[in-house]
Length: 369
Image (cartoon, rainbow, N blue to C red; front, side, top):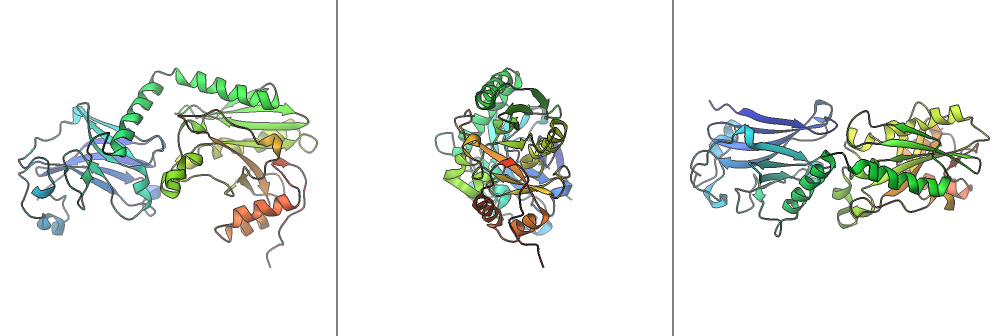
């Protein structure tokens, strides 16, 4: 009987996925496993790393029938002879900033990549340095000039190296606070919301022209999950965001406004904690929505001119500023009823001259029968 030994295990930032390296006396494989809360939603992804026995001439069907990791057949292997077992001391797993894919480095060399976007489809996608031809177990990793995933893995390695020494956050913080202060005046209060984790994230509070403003900074440090898969070449326009909330001071005291804006603290973690993304017309439920409301609509289109301005670029990409505005239970149900319901709700609010600033207003949809 063949027994695999787990020689490396590294969870992502939010502990939603676990990367492992496992080998037995025959083969070595790289895996990404969903955490228990996501096992019904996402499948395990695997990548063949190397044969520890000579490569067979034919496909290793016996292993497949027995449910054990198969050897890769000779036609697809860079090395036909048995390769040495991997030494756990030489392994390094580096997660993509999106937290849904990972690269495996071995003794300083890139060994394999399982891209994040592969999580959202049925077909297994991975790239191995020991592979020379695509097959159902993996595909060639190639080089940075021949494979964008190789180049991305190198980019992410430098990304983590730059963040490791801690000098980047003060620069990011200064850029975003300066941007927000240019729009809404001095930052009156500053709330850390990163839960002592990475990346650093905060909410800056401002008061301008009778409006309380609350804006996140740090969300756009990393791209959101799903977006590369959904938008492909257009992904740079959607994958980085910051969130804002604007509240008329005539209808809510500062204390109540701060309580309502505390919703941003959980919203800022949502994409990575839930392996999801936030975009125009999305809705998030919240216990701190004001009386008569039970969720927040996420929108940039709803913003008036005072809420539309450019944010500082992150890694060459311009983040989007999306505002969060309370919606009633009936409006939430309307938005949830169809894939375009959220954007339709934005249009209905705009027809009634509503914008991103929270003030008393009439419900814009009929109560469900």
